Image (cartoon, rainbow, N blue to C red; front, side):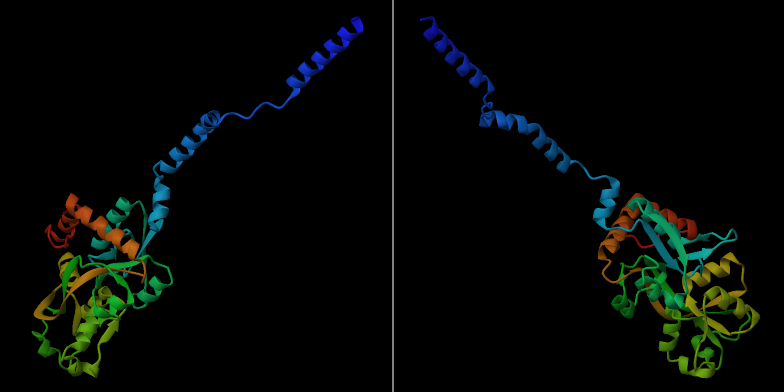
Length: 295
């Protein structure tokens, strides 16, 4: 009897021990969902969190540094002052745009005749320097809307015998190389009559106006904005003839395909206009608050 009882007790103990060592049952579907919920909500929160400013800049494909290419002898649009700093209307506008868009600003002097190559090779981000909008440039660049009006005019010394375009016949007439002033002169009927049948080309207008004063040329075809500012600021004995060579507008040029950057800059300019910044820059440089077009 004791032997039988011992056998039965041993069997019961063995079964109990087997039950304790077995693998725990899988959690129910509701329990599984409960244990995984925190991770899922964390992932959702991460995906919906606002992007940082650097991520926004990457998403918008704006350059970290905005390199403005210019002829640094083109007052008041962009020029080098006595402290060797590049200043001007376009510089102030571009700096305000860069501040609004979160880009670093850099002004880079270039050879004006090589501006298209500088842009297409990525050495500069844009050409923003009193650039005249033309059909040819619309084909070559992504051009902004016009932000300023200008005329191509004839500048002579006060004591010059030249009083009109007709008087340019037989005279040495200067213009900047690869400029809209040169193009306007070449398209005018007087061009074939000027001395040597060709313009005397200069790298920049400041040098040309120095030569005009020294008698090395008789007249210059150039931007009225630059002529009027330079003559007034430097008290030069020069005058702008009433005859105009051409009426035009200034725009900003970007590399072909850079439409996102172009749109961002135009939007920033519109916001700056609404905030009164454009009028402030116009007043600073021209003494009038409405010479820079707002849009």
